Length: 256
Image: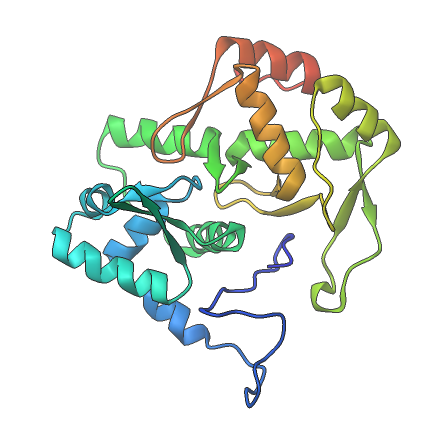
């Protein structure tokens, strides 16, 4: 995926930088559609949405299926290029194949109709999901959208007109001199990359959140500072120190 707001390149098994010999150059979208047309497989993808690896038994429980059925689903998702397998001793763990799959899951969540809420507990979980969560390796939800908005408004990020041909119409951003000074003072080091500032549309909020190297570095710093605690199922808990820190550093009143 080249990333960015509204641009998703769906992964396929054996994806390369160009079409293989004899290929038309078109993508088989139906193959991905088939993979995400099953509720159990969707639950597995959602469970893996925070970028961490989980065992087959945990994913079977998340999907509400037997071990044998889970094994079949995991084989299809791996063969389809959406998951990768990691060997940990004799155990096999599964994780999303990359950030482009996380972006795909977010895009599907944004398009999918909302399920009805039948209890106060479900309402609280939905609210926490909207407030702050992990999207593969970066902050999503209201917090992620607000952090990006503030950095743009303060001039820490600025639009650049260097969109590649296949990203036509996408707004790209770069870190400004002021933004670099802010990040350095904040203790954030963005690893060198071809395009460190990436973003895509948030699935629950009306705006984009940061991803890529910058989004990953910010999440790591927020966790190191104790502002955020990683919970189960993508959720991020904003700590009292986080409420104070986000207010002081980003001008965000998260108590509202």
